[in-house]
Amino acid sequence: WYQRRVRKQWYQRRVRGVQRQLTGRAFETFLRMPSATNPAKGQDVAEGLDKFSQVVEKKIRNLEKRRTKILDLLQQKKSGKDLNADQLSSVSSLSYVDANLDQLREFLPQFKSISTELEKAKKKSQRREEAKRCDVESKKVKGILSTLHFLSKLSQDLKEKLLTGLNGLTLTVEEITILDTFYSLTDSSSAPFSKMEESIESVSTHIQAFLERKDKEMCAGVKYSDVAALFDRLHEHHVFDPDYEPPKEEEPEPEEEPEEVPPAAEEEEEEVMESPVVE
Image (cartoon, rainbow, N blue to C red; front, side, top):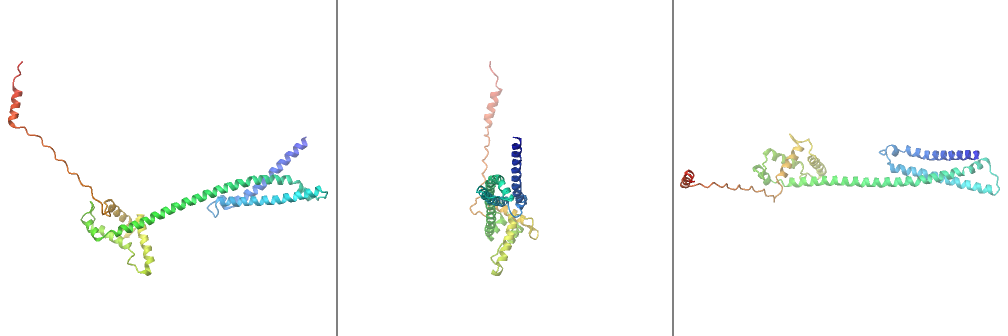
């Protein structure tokens, strides 16, 4: 009984050791992958798990081939054929092979499930980043088009009205000059066809700096942030809205004057107050 117990414990330790050895090699292979320690290098975690699953699948195939050979040797032994020492050792390892196959077959679906979930999360993150990028690009295009639109509205008539006052806003000659300078820098209509691409690139640079309110000089003594602040004032006073009507100021109601009492009535009132009281 004691010997059977010792053999059983030894067998269990041997099986666990082989399992740790096999899975340890697989994990070691996985940890050597760049994605396992640093996902930013080449592969991501999902790809690393896929490669690890491939290692496990290859190990399962090798163990299945080994098991098939062992079963053939067992069949030969049952048929009466004598086996050499190596063949007998291989036959005795059948239980180890079965235990390892069961262990690896248990691991494989788990890693594939994890890999699938990571791949789903990766695609979801990519869609989110793509939507965010499209939103940024859309806002950028919208900002450029709106800037060009408002610049086209700065006619000579509108600028003359701004010099005299429009919707409560009056600009100086220097501020009108700033608007004219910005308009000339963002106008590519007069550029020759051979330099059209270069002109459009320059216009895009100026408008982008304007939208980002950069503290960079647009011209001598004037920054893009100053131009943006000037446009803020134009929008606050609805300069570009032809249908805007300034609110009318309510006229104050006239104050009621107190009624004047005739002098005769005042004398009668005093006589009444001075008359003695009859008891």
